[in-house]
Amino acid sequence: MNEELAITVGMAARAARERQGLTQGDVASQVGIAMEVYSRMERGRVLPSSTTLRRLSMVLRIRADTLLGLDGPSLPDEARTVALADREEDPPSLRRLVRVLRPLDEEDLRAVGLLIQGALALRDR
Image (cartoon, rainbow, N blue to C red; front, side, top):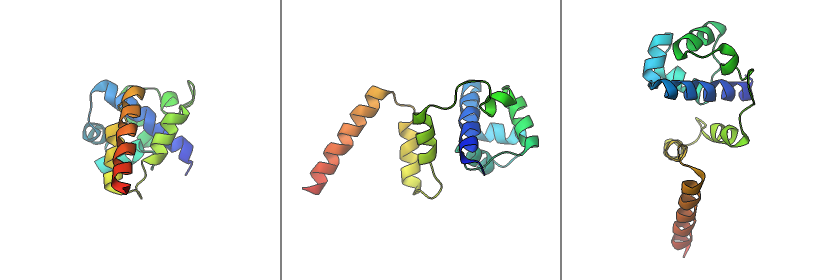
């Protein structure tokens, strides 16, 4: 599997789904796939078949070119890093933490980072 392509499709699908105000379950049901499969697709762990890609583009009202990353700039390095960090082999608690941190802006991320560093320093004493 082309990991970079899977991440590109997943990030584009997630962005389109969120713009539409849909849940992963909504999209999965309309596309005709299991929600777990759709979730893995958004995380860049599964590449959709051509048939699923077509249905996905219709449900999300987005061009397949956009889902494939062919009509614009590639993912920023930060987005690629976040997608790569959301691995199935990571413990669920880490994946939950990454999902909580994703929507934060740069300033909030910096503040959380400082809090974590402080807490770790206290723990190590």
